[in-house]
Length: 560
Image (cartoon, rainbow, N blue to C red; front, side):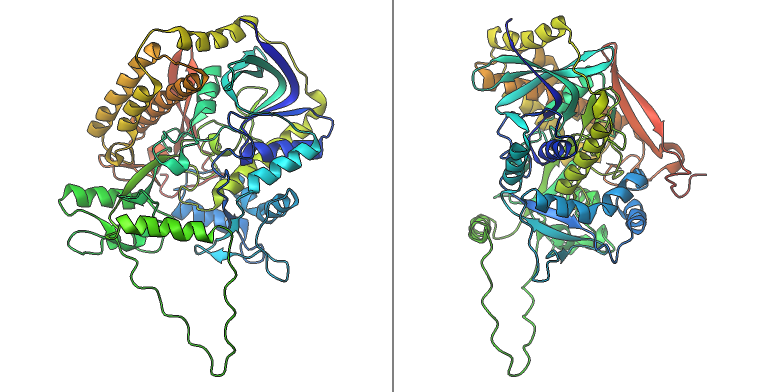
């Protein structure tokens, strides 16, 4: 098959907040490097922060010591399974990252004295709202610095040689044109695996994770990709902090059954409690925030308060809430499975186990080990999603810049490129009625029921794996009508792989820890399971192994 070729010093695959931040940071440090961003949508409108803004985690540098937060996080969130040194660096860089985003065009709210306008969210953290144009503005900054873009371009496979990754095989979603992009350094910024269940999170398709696995990169913590959020049953709207006010059909406040103090974000035990109440016949479960608190009394002869300034998006939020309330007057809730699997293993400079390949943002959050026994954001650390993407992007750019003088664009295996493009031809020429949607639906039946993927038990996981096996059996029969269908088939393949990895590793981990819960192994076992589970593809086989977490660096209680 004939194809186009392109070359660059640094190839960034994915144009969301992580990919854009990495591209900009590399160009700021090394203007001479040719940086190319390949995005299957349109960089600036892609990723989980696309045109939706979000929130940024904030640590008061005058009040919060990074290692004080690390201790809190290990005890209350990460269950001693995290890379504490990396977490401390993330906290220490907080203010600098906010300033960096501002310099790149992000609009963050500030007070009259120039300080950031924050609102508290937990015992040690606060958050800052971000504007809806954050990624679009950073793209504009990237373009001014000379970063090149190829949009509507999807990843097929990474290209490798004996020395590591040498680039990628991609194709245009618009007209199907195949292309080989040769690169000295390749950065995956392709997001997490979210199984296309929750619409807000549907951009996490896991295709970069699957490509890294096929190329031979090590994955880590694949079992921590099962985040779920309470949502209204009828409208599917997310219910933030609803776990604090959960009631069953008997009007019993069931939050006290699993929560002794206010949590930083929804714990997995809230999902367990929901299922338990339903199983015991006490459903439906609803949330009740109660009446709003009265306004504080005004001082005598106090001047009238000025009317509140309208905020960008207020009208949308009001209409969205009204539309949800119209069909959810009883506020019945159920868990909405989101996923957030992010397992590409990386070091502190976001280098993978393959030379020439880096992974940042939500494709390597859990793989970095930074946060321990939780899925990628918002898993138990709300506001850390965008900032972790920026943090990992800056660390990756730091490593690339340090080795800039040694970057060289090598050759590639022609047979490997042709094999990648043959995958497209096979899908388009195959005469079959099996579609990507059928495969996707089977995987969703495996992952969406929280009694299979969150509150796990060996027997329920076997049921889930039956669906995964059915989906995997259909992969050789999938066909596509056009290039968009080809892209969906590749994403369906990635979903099957991610679900299989999740349940294989979950069967191995015989304990409950952090977000990971097993009904048949309800206790945390630091003696045997203060370890990371890693997996690699070797000779076509899925090979799992255990990685020791050095207790002298990252201690856990009760190790004897």
